[in-house]
Image 1 (tube, rainbow, N blue to C red):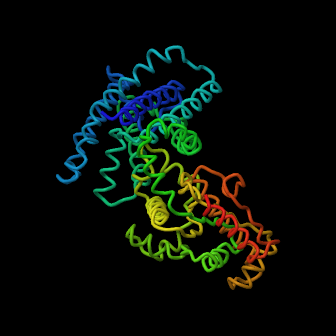
Image 2 (cartoon, rainbow, N blue to C red):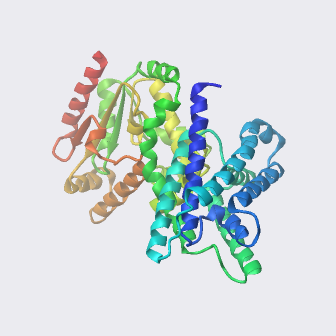
Image 3 (tube, rainbow, N blue to C red):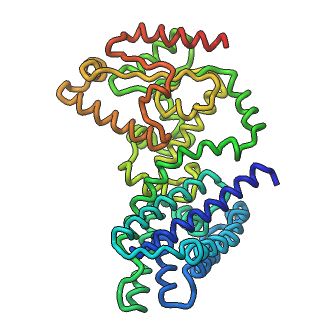
Amino acid sequence: MNVFLFRRYLLFCVSLFVNALGIAFITKALLGTSPITSVTYVLSMFTPLTIGQWTILLNLLFVVLEPFLMSRQELKSDLRMYLLQIPISFCFGTFIDICMHYVLFWLHPESYVYMIIALLIGCVILAVGIALEVKANAAMMAGEYFVNVITKRFHGEFGYVKLGFDVTLVILACLLSFIFMSGIYGVREGTVVSALIVGPIVHFVSPYYRCLDKWITDPAVQKEAAMEQGKHIVITIAREYGSGGHLLGEMLSKELGLKLYDKEFIQLAAQRSGMDEQYIVKNEQSIPSFWLKCILSKNSERPLESSLSSDDVLFVSESKIIQELAAKESCIIVGRCADFVLKDYPKVLKVFCYSDVASAVNRCVEEYGIARENAEAEIKRVNRNRVHHYEYYTGMKWGEPHHYNLMLNTGTIDLKTACQLVKGVYQGLEKV
């Protein structure tokens, strides 16, 4: 086995144990358990089997049901991932029991304050484990795989199917508890809290795992990619609304003889993703509620590229287009988180355009045709969407000076001067 693939599997196994430890902490808090283990926890309360043993059985049930929702071709093409669910289910269930009975044997919070503390610690640990599992990108647990199969079978969006799946498990746990124990046990406020906060915590901690990239990625592959990338220079322009970033791109395109990509992305992304162009125009650089998006997409043991939500598909499609353009030619790319997508690219000139409010309002009125009384509100709305979109997908702060090569205040620097500044830096890169 390739040593880097082995490391990915090792990382995945570690993440399983961390996930199990997080679930054990949450369960030991006695405020309910996480949605994915709600049924197994309730079953363990009135049967001889442990929560870990019931977890194994439930996951194996998912494995048995999955082929009935898959075509023969889908099963054949994904056979390795399908079969891996079986040993993963046994490991995960065993890890939960080990954590519950041996690692955390001492944890018996009595006061409500200590219960809350244990619950929050468990949520953080679970989030750390999920983020590590996403980074490993080696396999998928049975619950996630089952949701993935349902999503493909009924052409849904993964985030909402996953939410429906978790809600179904919680309802089933409540019914089992009421029928067999004459009351609601095992499902409490902790179940809701873990469902709401684990996803955003995953989103917060994920960027810190970039330090593992070199450990799990073959350097020969990285070197080959770097050699391919180093042939061209790409100028990326991030911009506040009303700062004239697109106009600067047009001026640079004429001055340097480079192709400009901005609105052209709409057609390119539509072709790659199969989405309607009007949908892309409306949703391209905004996302749903930031908190909701974290809950739906990041509270998941799956890499972004496997997400089936429309906005994730669009982001991945545009990111691949950016990488292909950079490999093909020197060019100018406006927006689309291009500075992040090309963060490892050896020759990229990252520009950020910003402006004072008065100058931005004037540009919106004079060049964009927006009514003056509406301009400032529109500037705030668009910038807010860009901030959320950028920070959600990159884990980095939009407009942070350390991320860019040039910060241009186009309120005090006219665009012609800004164009000459960028041109000078670009010509310097050409000599390298």
